[in-house]
Structure formats: structure tokens, C-alpha cells
Length: 236
Image (cartoon, rainbow, N blue to C red; front, side, top):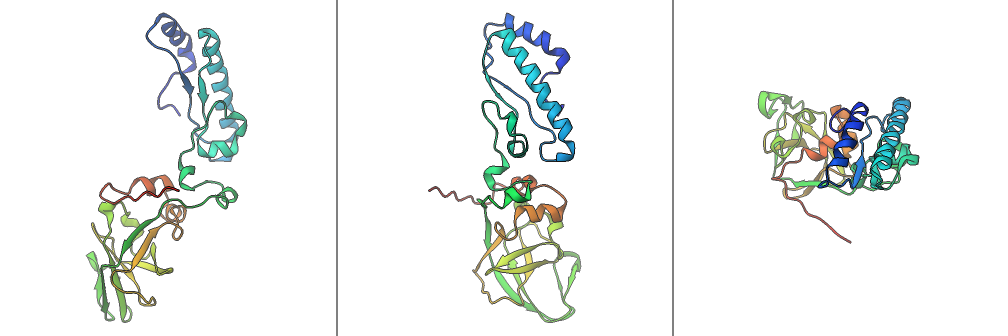
């Protein structure tokens, strides 16, 4: 990854420092996979695991220690099970997200972002919605306003017909630009009322689908949700 840590050429110096320092005890040795989710880089991933084995084994031998070793993230657990060592680091997998389509079928969604319909209005053909008049109605249209926007972490790129939310289990396309605190959807075909609950993401749409449409990764969708959004945790 070349983010943090020590290079191979610095290992002897590191070991010497650790031997001379009685205040520091090595409890864990770790690295982080750069390409575990992309099997076209399988050879690179295997070389990274091989290098980790070589360097961590040298530290163990030279310092006469047996610390916890770990290198695998979520996709690494699936794609390189031979390198699980003493533990693994399950990250986005905890949220039911995998980069493997077959594995995804075995995972359950564990996080849903919800809101409500705060207002419903009907506009006529030729009338517009939102900043810049980026949506112009081509017929009489029923518009639902949802009190969530880009200040809450919803990407502005998700608006203007790209994305949708789910209202009473039906797809409602986002029309116009997403505002700071609100977004608007076309609910012309949906039997709904002000106060009804809506799903921003969860089972439908999924964060995987959103990430594909926005040309990003599910991590960004999930971590972008701001702290002003209320969290409710359920435990079995």
C-alpha cells in the first residue's frame, strides 16, 4: 500500500531498535492488502502475502516473540483464505457488502437509511422542480419532498433522474437537483401520503447499486452519511 509501516530494507534497523528498547513490546504484526478485491491483480496480492510472511517471520525469529499476525480485509478473507494467520479484519462485510456477486447472495443487508414524505404537491406540464429548473414536467406530475439532502451525505450526483428512493415498495425517481436538506421525487404512480416512510438505501436501492451508478465504492456511500442523521441500533 505504501501508506504506513516499514519497508524491507529498514527491517534490520527496526529489529535493532526494538531489541534495544525495553519499553516497547510487539503484540501484533500486520499489513493491509492493496488488491484483494480485484483478482486480475492476484499475482501481486500473492507476492504481498509472501513478503508479509517473510518479514513477519524474521521479526518473530529475531525478537523471539509470537505476536498476533493479520493481513486480510473482507475481500481477502474470501479470495485468500490461506493467509488468515491469527485473525482477520472483517470491515464492510459486517454491513452485508461483498465484491463477489456469488458471496453477496449469502449476505444480508444490515443497514437501512430511512426518511419520510414531508410534503406532496401536484405540478402542471411545463413547471419545474428545484434549483436551476433541471426538471421540467412533461405532464401533470405529483412530487414528493423528502427531508434529506447533501448535508446529510446524499450525493448531488444521485439527483436529476439518476437515482431513486423506495416509497411503499415502489421506485420513486429523484427529480431535479438534490438540495442541502431536501430532495424531490416523482410519486405520480404511487399511492402515498405525507408522513409515509421511505427508504433512501437498504434492500432497494442497495449501496452497491448506488456505488455503481455514482462510479464510486459502497464504503463512500455509507461513510458519507453525516452525524446529523439519527442512528438507531437493533440488537438480538
